Amino acid sequence: MTDIERVGVVGGGLMGSGIAEVSARAGKDVIVVESSAAAVEAARGRLESSLKRAESRGKIDSAQAVLERIRVVDDIEQLADRDIVIEAIVEDEKAKTELFRRLDEVVTSPEAILASNTSSIPIMKLAVATKRPSHVLGVHFFNPVPVLKLVELVPSLMTDDATTERARAFVQDDLGKNAIDCQDRAGFVVNALLIPFILSAIRMFESGFASAEDIDSGLVLGAAHPQGPLALADLIGLDTTKAVAESLYEEFKEPLYAAPPLLQRMVEAGLLGRKTGRGFYTYS
Ligand code: NAD
Image: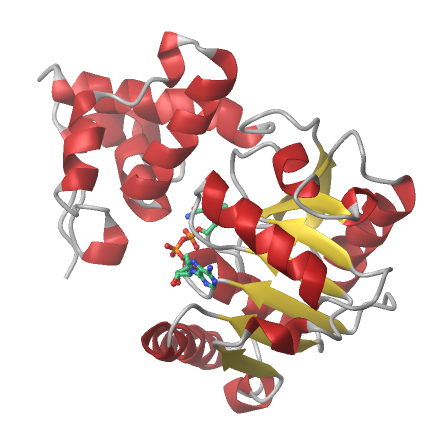
C-alpha cells in the first residue's frame, strides 16, 4: 500500500466513475467532482449500478460499503486535501487546461499528484497550465476500468521521477493494475495503434465494402479479437473516438489519423454508441 489515501476524480462519466470505483474498492477515500447537480446524480447512478453488478457477480462483498467511501459533489474546492487528483472530463484541450489551472489553485499539498486520464492530449499542455509541472503526469486507464488491467503512465518532459514512481506504485500496488511507460506523444502506445485501425474499419463500412457485422465478425473469428473494431468504437464512444483521432491528426498530420466523414456525421447526429443507445449498432 502507498501513502496515497485521499483520491479525487474530476468527471464522473464512463471513465471517471470507473476510476472512482477501483479506487474505492482498493480502500481509498474518494471524492468525485461533476459539473452540475444533474451530472452528480448521473455519476452516482453509474457507480451504484456498476457496484451492484460487481456484488451480484461475487467480485465484492458489499456494494454499500464501497459506496460509503465515495462522495460525488459539484464543488471542486472539496479536492483541497487530496493526495492525487485524476482528471477524466471531456476530451477537450481548452476545458482540460482550464481545469488544471483551477486544480493548481485548489489542491493544497505540494506533494499531491495532478493526473490526467486524457487519451491523446499532450500532458505538457496540461502541466504548463499549473505552477507545479513536476507533479503532473498522464495516468491513462482503459474502458471498462474495473475490468481492464492496463494503465499507461505518461510523464511529460517536466515530470519528476518521484512523481512517476508514486503514480506507478498507486496503480500497481494499490489498484492492482499493470503499468506501461509511454512518451508524451498524442495517443501514447495503445491509441496510436488502435485508432487508425478503428478508422480503417469505419472507412471500409462507409465505402459499402462490407457490413458492420461482417467487419466485426472478420476480426473476432479471423484474428481472435475479443470484439470487432466497430463494436469497440461504440463502446469507447464515437465522440471520444473522433476527439482522439483529431488529436492524433493534429500531432502527426498523417491521413491515417483523419476522422472519416461518416464518423463526423454520426457524432453530429448524437449517435455516440452504447452511451446513447445507437452507434454502428443499436442497444436497448
Ligand atoms: P464521458 O463523456 O463519459 O464523461 C465525461 C464527464 O465529465 C461527464 O460526466 C461530464 O459531465 C463531466 N465533465 C465535463 N466537464 C467537467 C468539468 N469541468 N468538471 C467536472 N466534470 C466535468 O467521457 P469518458 O469516456 O469518461 O472520457 C473521459 C476522459 O477519459 C477523456 O479524456 C477520454 O479521452 C478519456 N478516456 C476515455 C476512454 C473511453 O474508452 N471512453 C478510455 C480511456 C480514456
